[in-house]
Length: 149
Ligand code: CA2
Image (tube, rainbow, N blue to C red; front, side, top):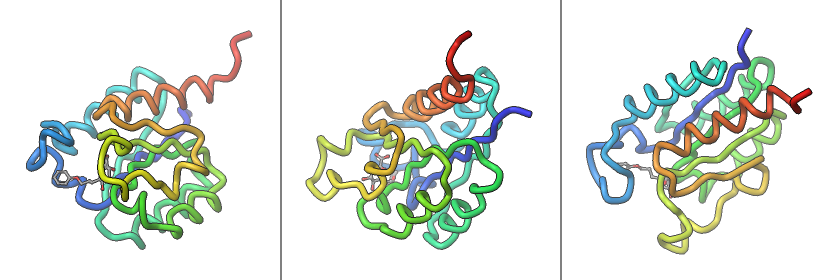
């Protein structure tokens, strides 16, 4: 069975491709999901790609990851900068986490410079656009494969 990676997306990311293309690019979330699906197939991973505008729903998905997932790729969107609850749930899941942002949050407003998730993440990708999701999946596939013999 290929390792399962949850790819989770936070609030307003359902609007991708419809507004603010200079910041977030032209791809829709469905196109990002398709890209992740192709990456996962190449890399020998199984993924579940989800987005929600409801913080409690995201918390429930993270809680459910504990028993069944090898890794979590998460773009917590605005909750990155506000949510202790998401950080606590990620820690409690005991699943390795890679945080992804489409934009380079450090080149933007000061309130985007702080992340509650980054200190507990294995890695953080920001500013790579949708390629960041691929890079995160690639890293997990290396990690799960273990050191070459
Ligand atoms: O760069 C990222 O991926 C962010 O996580 C995106 C969040 C933002 O709050 C973070 O600071 C950085 C915003 C997601 C909203 O996406 C939209 C896409 C198109 C139109 C409007 C919003």
